[in-house]
Image 1: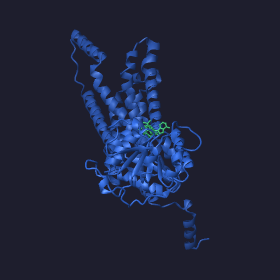
Image 2 (image 1 turned 135 degrees about the vertical axis):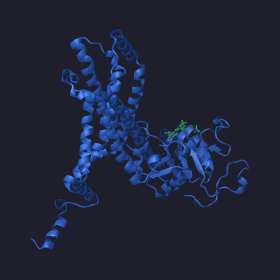
Image 3 (image 1 turned 90 degrees about the horizontal axis):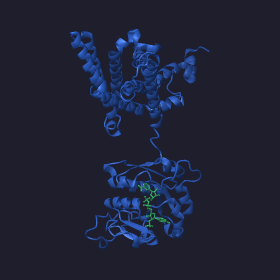
Image 4 (image 1 turned 135 degrees about the horizontal axis):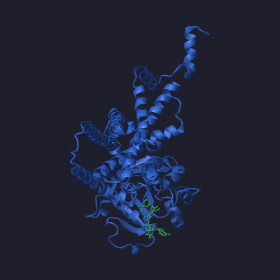
Length: 483
Ligand code: NAP
């Protein structure tokens, strides 16, 4: 039977003077196992005023001072018979069977399975389901496995505060949710115990929502890097014997990074525009988007952050340009040749303006992009209301895109119109990179036209065109008396 949670579990005389304050209405919590997780969990529970009993196979082996003094150390049986209502299984699932002798002592108690899956693709029941099979009279709850021992110690101050919980027992789940809240975590109800597998592999996943965006960014980088290598290094070497392989390490990387940053930023806004045009074409917002578009829309934040990373790296690389030996070499040689020939460097008004504008747009673009990156952090984004968030992410986002396009065009406008800029009939990568962003800006411009934006706004407020709403159409026909 489950204990009454409102019954005080400790009498005043049992509380030692130097022990941390233990709330008398708190349930007593037992932890089986005396390893890393057990230690961190015990400290945290204790700090929240919960009485903790740790059950070990061999209490004498636990070095003194490993657990705080207020934690009671018992053998496994002694720990679970201490009037506890919740028992954390802080041991590996392969050792659950060794606890079968405690079946009757654990009956009616909440067993919290904190184990993680050993690998991603395991078939059969989850650890928690196997625990429930071994202890059918207990209330098995899956939870806390996504929190590391370190996060348990730092808790709400640092690290993740989310605790995923699932169970077939509503009562068991309620008690663990209460406990999690008491410990300063945010419990997330994931449903029945069948969700345990999903929770167990959660901590094994490596950036699950980032993989697609990272692959796209890398592919773009390899494309621009490969294109630049072919156009600027390999073909000139084969055709004229001109050796520019030294550019592989810095020059070419710095040429590819801004192109990747620009295209990736365009990819952030492209799916939103595509979705808008799809809604306009369909005349309704109630038809689902294709799954690839859904996926793409969900990856915009990651694409934006990767675009920011590439732009920031481009900024740092560009600042390093004057430190390069080749820059110094060219500068000194050009100066020497001019001195020898008695020629002064002419003042190039257009060139000066171009470089001023190009640098200014780049710096401003990077600044706005940094703002977007910062507001995409949940801790910052949560402080903004919806209007503020869309203003930053959409309004300022398009400003960042425009500034980045201008930065590229101010840099490359000469190249665009000179035949020498197209060696081997290949345009500069900076020109290739602005194509998609320009398409995005033009599409966005069309969406701002009153005739289009009004229709889109109506669709987004639930209006549907007649071909999508046969019921309304029938009413309309009937109202007009036309068969
Ligand atoms: P650990 O340091 O190796 O501790 C495991 C404990 O299990 C041992 O100290 C041992 O304590 C106990 N145990 C009970 N029966 C056992 C048996 N038959 N054979 C061996 N040991 C037995 O492991 P841990 O890092 O605390 O992890 C414990 C559980 O927490 C695992 O399921 C793990 O997936 C989960 N977890 C850990 C973390 C983390 O950050 N460490 C995070 C999330 C989840 P006694 O000798 O005192 O009985």
